[in-house]
Length: 365
Image (tube, rainbow, N blue to C red; front, side, top):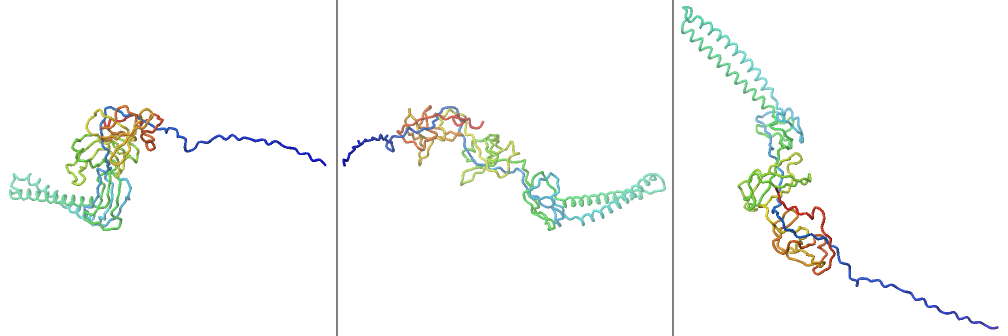
């Protein structure tokens, strides 16, 4: 038996493997947002916190003592001027008034009788039917009765005034913020019954450094931001108290609110107070500045290479800082992405667009 051997050729298959580059490949240049350093007229300003306070808030007190019959209002109720806040029992005073009305009626009758007698005697004064003494007595009697009636009327007025005091009324329109007495309690003279606040009369109180306060005059204006309403408006300086806190070196200032309808007492606000007049300044966006200890650093793009600059800044002007030293007008500074770049690094740049790219440096007009 013959065996046939078949030799099969071995075909070598070469695999072409494409190399994959990893960490050793240089990354592409990062993309950063830049803005130019500006030079234009501007006015420095100072941000100062403030608080909205009521111009008219009072604890309404009783002028008399007595038993509380009614307290018709509750905390949060709005009341009009002249509304009755508390009613005090007045039965004894009403009885006294009725008695006094009787006294007045009697005094008026006696006065009428005395006037009739005087009129009659005057007609007979030139006749033998009446003596001079009798005429003088009639005149005196009429004067006495007239005085008694006026005295009785004065007493009645005092009683009416007392009755008025039994109803404690609102001296101005407002909202009840505290209720200090309840029905059935005994009220003492001078005791408070409610606290009333007028929400339509508000102003802003701010503690201002004396160095700034000395430059302001009554009628000066500032921008005020109300965070709860998300709005800003111009407010006017009413007064600055001539008293300085020896620790903080601040003076209390009070500012008129032009549109208080949407504002509430106790609201925290932010004032932007102008300092001096407009002047040509070098300006850089706040987003370009990086704090490093006591230094203010800015990354500048020269061509496509990062360079770091140590800058000296002046006061804040809205979204900008005044530049005193370290930058030149027209230089491009990094405002987005500056946390991931280093000096000497290559970058790609795009220009900042939108509202932040336009300088709003007019301070407060």
